[in-house]
Image 1 (cartoon, rainbow, N blue to C red):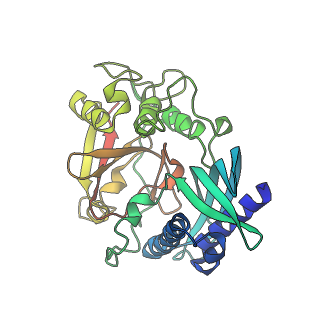
Image 2: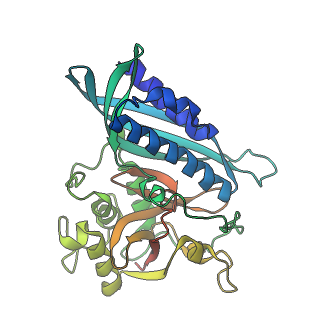
Length: 340
């Protein structure tokens, strides 16, 4: 069974690299609606990633998928499997004279996958998971042809101290990397920090994780727990609550708010666009509809062209390009600088 699961997921990863959706047809049971939906979703993922990479002038050279089976539930002709999938993405910039600088990032996804036999081979009957590309697929037909290919040309960033009076950026990033969860690159044996509650299945763990990154006193950024911002509180675990706490307490300040195009547009004052002001340990908040912050991520690095990379939970992301998966035209991004 393990070899069949690995075969299916490895082929799906290969299609993400090549952009060819043809091989996917043999991996899904399209005789029923769940299999059809799963196949349609996978085809959209392939097309989205291909389009996203072309607009940013990059090439995905390799995408590897490692599967960890947690539980197997035989149910007649269908076998239900709970599993974790860790992706490792490798990409290079087409504009580089030598493609020697390989950039890597990881994504961790928790699946509930059901398999059935078709022509003596196991195929996907259905597949439920939190997809890192989900919000980009809703309006996949949106025309993004006007997005500039070269987003951040200046690779230099102004110097700043990693150690601040009440916020240690270096430790915050180290914490984010250690406890990133199921994503490739994460530490702690792909597990969250057991010291804190896990809100997956109860609204999502993204904001709870960011608060840990900011405030854990032993391993994280060490921001003091004041103003009701304590583990489990509304401002600790709710996205809108955390954003409001940071802004109104003065712990954070909004660099800029806008669409992807707004924030990457060069100006005289900001030649790299507003995203060029992000520092390690700063935050990106994702708004789905005015006044509804849906997700949080922390800046944990920059790729070979200075493109900001983030970590997050729920769909676990490790050093992922900050906008990947957020192509819906209604999405606005809040870039938040931590003032500590």
